[in-house]
Length: 116
Length: 271
Image (cartoon, rainbow over all chains, first blue to last red; front, side):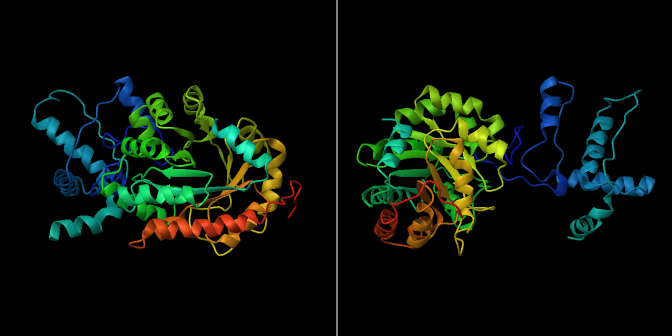
């Protein structure tokens, strides 16, 4: 339990919280919401990981192809989608990606990252 | 004798309770144990052993820093309980564990209560468990003869005071101020009013903590409440280099003297 929420948490065996890192501010937290915890437990959702570089690549790709600046959080979903498509796991199927936010807020951190 | 019996008995004798908060393993394991003994020798009725946690949301900068240092040196809930077990055979103070709840969940609620009871711990404070969610922790404590200590804030509504104070045991922890632990310039002037609002709701003794850092402030607290809890002022002294245990002990002895002069407490005190 962290900050009053009982949910899945990055922690060690003694219950100490492990620091999180993500280039996306909205993912840079060692816990997830209780709703995600329940969705995981019910098996309706599976969760996976995407690193900072993959997210930035997906961010840039959507900007180039569609002129849409996705939020860095949503860019993780785009990166995962690319991975699914590359593995031919979605052939013949319709894939929906939720762009949960806009990336205007993220352009500075992306620019900094790309330039360095 | 349970903590509840003890706190009730000393109140009946008009003996103001002195509670020392010490962060387990701070500044190091050996100094912590020495400081624990010094606190007992200085006349602390209860020592509240704080389990360091990565995210101590109720604590101000002093205890936060102590918590971080203790974690870096490898302190854990399990190790703190071992240290308590060793210490309790040689000290007079009653031991209470203050832990954020996540380390307790990691150990297992029932396992924690069993191990705490085995080590001679008599009370438990889980500051980030709300009253609504407290029943499993309360039941596990009760099953082991450990008092589950509730907290109330100055903003607690009359209904909430009733709800929480009614089932309190050991003592009720009255948080004197809004905000986190740590030194304040003054004890709030409406503390008497806060205590008076809780008093009719329970026969359990009322102890006040947060922001008490001088013997004079402690005496101001025990003029209206049954006990006073001191934390950051001790941690600051514990972290100030060699001689930590003596420094904390002599400060607590001064506090003891100051509060013992306030035994003519009036239960019906109004602000």
